[in-house]
Length: 293
Image 1 (tube, rainbow, N blue to C red):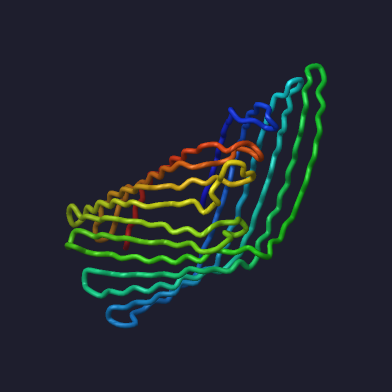
Image 2: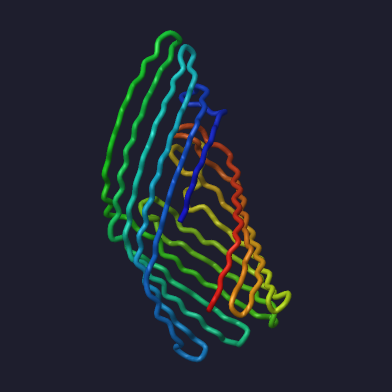
């Protein structure tokens, strides 16, 4: 469940060669629910196989208020737009996993994930007000549109993931993963293939106190932006670090964990404006607990 509430102000770019500013208030609620069954078992003493099949429901609600101002020689133009979007998706996804243990201290795993979109409906309402101020005279212009779209070509990318885990000692675990997303669409958005990697270390300081450290990549699945491009989405490759502390007993556990991602790239603030250099920093901290009876 993702909730995003964003307020931004941009300046220092131009529209039609005139200096402009851009304000945006952006709110998204995006909820994905998965429910299904798993069947798993040992094929041999060292090989296990599992299959999970999920039913998928995703509902997204998006509200965007944007104000663009650009100053011409004799007038100032304001464009205000309000967009309200709701999206509802149903589908089925499945994961097939295989784990092999060639030795007591090594495990090798691979999984394949694929899915089918059964229905994808989007409703969009957009109100636009364009106002030109020439000093003593204001000339407003209004428009309203409402669209209902039923997509028939929504897709989910295939995900192939391979990894290895090694226990060099009773207290230490080392892991490495490679994750490939293969496909040209994510729901209805155009995407590109990506290959990401992750490396992790877990060390038990005591029998009840493990420390976990990870490094990972989160590469952009959007096209690279070049000078002169228009209408491209942000392209930023992210590199991350994660850290977790845990206290575990036979029947309960408490976990404090966090991650940070950082990267640089390119983006366009609005429409046909120029290309901007972009820096992204994301971080998250969580405290979780569990109990077993």
